[in-house]
Amino acid sequence: ATGAYELVELPAGMIDGGAFVGAAARELAEELGVTFSEGDLIDLTASLPGNDHEIYFSPGLLDEKARFYLAQITVSPDELTKFQGKATGLLEEGEQIKLWVVLVSEVQKHTRDGKTFIALYLYNHWQRRNG
Image 1 (spheres, one colour):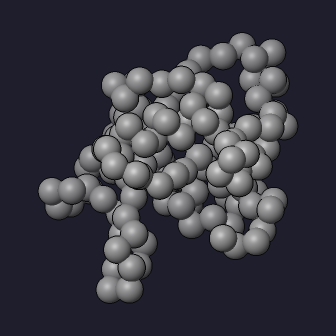
Image 2 (cartoon, one colour):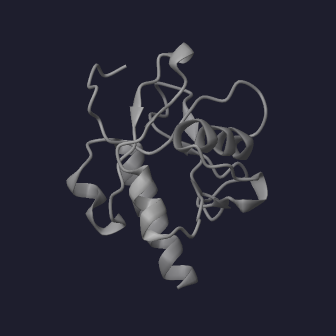
């Protein structure tokens, strides 16, 4: 939607029915080529106030809302290298995704995506609570 082909962002997608966590697992499979079950995902928004634990990007203007999930896997250095530059996404949906492997501590140097900044904040908050 931005017209910026080289925009660095986290895997994300729309929900066409079903639950946020199911959509998150589906997007990870489509965009990373890694399969997670819903039970593998950690809900980073679970500690937010309110009953729905959802983040509203522009309340009063849009009804767009999101939840953020953490997926963790252990891979060897060789496996990690195979992710770098890998082309993924669903071509029939116009997705042309090129994977980037970036250290969490350097994410802010590579993006202008608001969702990614929110995810980084929630991840750091989760890290402080869970060590």
